[in-house]
Length: 335
Ligand SMILES: *Cc1c(COP(=O)(O)O)cnc(C)c1O
Image (cartoon, rainbow, N blue to C red; front, side, top):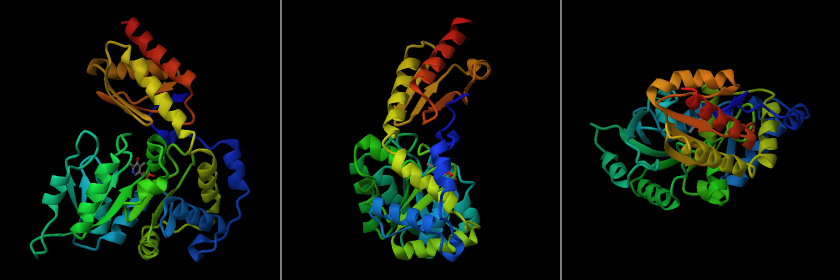
């Protein structure tokens, strides 16, 4: 199957599985799994932070970070489209007693500075305490403008807020921007990074930040059920991904551009955006379900909605994209 639904669908490759089976392990709840410790130290170093912490998922990593920054009755400022707000089951409110203050994202994924400034509440018993600004990079595949990130995090700091980056795909952003990941992480107090997306590992995220913040997050990880035992088996896949699958993200970005160029030649398709490894396009509503079924019969998995998203990753080749474009053309030609 050619699976364009998400970059989470990648399967571990034979050499990644070999690295996992060769991993030296211990009990990470006791803090003595050497492979987990190595992954955490490697990420801390790569991102220019003091410490790292391994999590089973990005959702849990983001939540533990929010809970480390914010206490009960505190508030975090976040985009309406942000994963931590929209796609994590409301965890910050449900499990963290943290009030979200969602704000409309601009088209480039940023949250306008004046909206952030206006949402920060004065210290007054009527209000939740504004404690944290959370941004996401990439967001909808888009790399946040560097100048914007500098200004937004500076504004937050001036007003006494901490800053967290949901950097699930921050390596995509770094490769696309041609900058070290440490440069993109630098303005933030904490960053959460996924290995189960374009980097191709089956499981895992790492949170990085100051030693003090990671110590608090470590306690919340245990509370949230994220303490794992011989987790070095999983951390080995992430270390393998760091060594082998970062630079190749550029191929996914080139393939996404190729996919977008192909869609642009089809008159029924309205292109919306292409950035890093994601393409968004609109299809006439009445064609979405039949086209999705047509593609599936031809071995191509998509999620055809009015605004459809196509994601490139290491298990999608340039030839696969040509197959996909030809199949979409074939569908419309047969109408
Ligand atoms: C995937 C993702 C996460 C975390 O998702 P998990 O499936 O819990 O690992 C967080 N933020 C963004 C932007 C994501 O794409």
